[in-house]
Length: 305
Image (cartoon, rainbow, N blue to C red):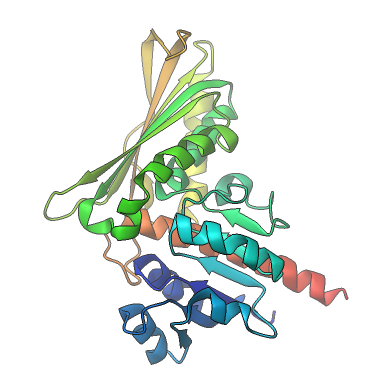
């Protein structure tokens, strides 16, 4: 199939790692890499590949007579919140890697095809991409009254954008545990670990289920979902058997439930970022999966015209 053109806005670590992945895609063609700092390492790397490297920001993109139909947004929550309506007005589909939460949440292993027609989709957060699939898998076996996740990442993998968006991270992730994961109530915590050498991303999922829920069904659903995520994030792995607390415990709402604990880790592919930065790699890998699916849909629609 002929590749569908796209652009990446944001030339920091996430945008640059995403550029490496998009360049290998059989269905996406990278038309431009767009930032605001002409001296950025990302733009220099793009130039070395022969990719059009732009330091005039989103205004350049919107000034094109025929802009690419798909844009990956890798700036910050505030920047994308301002740019989103302008991109929509220009008929450009935006895949948002910031926690701006402008459009519907998309987690590829859970709802990849649910919002392909939306003008803007949000990739939640790194913690959301790692843990929402597990909560959704548990929800498939029975009601989840409460889900809480703890995402632990290396301090060195948390750049200025991540640190500036901590509040948005916890709020967006908690909402996605409910809206996509299916929990009745959700909570998210992020920990920046300063250990040296840096640790890879680790995630803990706690979920409360009805005491009568079939434990084997939960275990099988989790293992199956981990394999589905690992299909597009090869460094995603289950670190132990699924753990069940046999005694009853009470949720924040006071309901007596059984607790499920799932321990995960995410190592990066090392495309541009170090292997320990699995928190960033899972975002770019998930966004690539969504972008390729959008491109396939656009190409199919064009073929029947």
